[in-house]
Length: 276
Image (cartoon, rainbow, N blue to C red; front, side):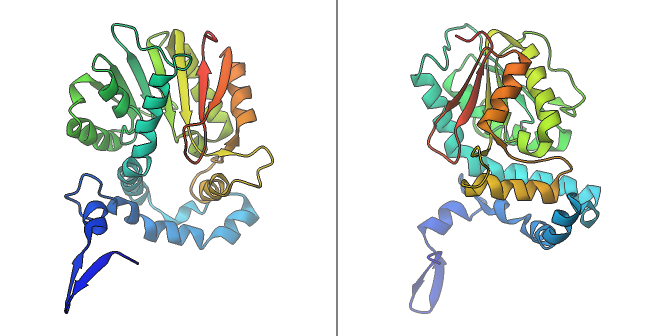
């Protein structure tokens, strides 16, 4: 597998393993492997889930679900890190996508998780302030990474259920929905988009990062694989097409909706509140 080196009878980690599989490494990927046992058990119930159209939630207690959420939040920081940093650079280069000319850039990070989607914005714009919303245990992961990158003082951590809390009225320049719509499902995704619209200032932008299925839902492997995973692990989750996102954003009031290629598994969905 190329993960070890051997000299005489001695095995040792090679440079790749030292970079990605040591907890002391900045690029540690070991949290990716922590939930695999539970996920494997879920996938064994795929026939039942397909027959009933419902996830086999009885496999996991609330405590196990919370622990799984923490492992996933940790893992997704490394999984999305390169993509998140690249997204900010793409937006910074394209004035039609983003103009960071305000004295204070206010960012709303909904279902922040590890804060992987907002941290690169805070690093790029030293005047930025971030409001990160998630469950209290998950926010501990976000705080850890915000501290690691030296931006914690510009974060406001809001422990709450994103379905229950209002995001405010015309408070933010930028709202982020990072890989949350596929677990919320169509109804709650539309509600989150509407709440983000109300929370954005007149010139505000909404960025949606997720796996976007092709229009016929048969060609793009990863979005469809994630849809199956959502069937197994969520009550309403699924992956959606660009047309579906565009309809939801338009109905919420966004004047312009774009699919922005960033060079990853899917484009970014960009909603412009004023269309400019």
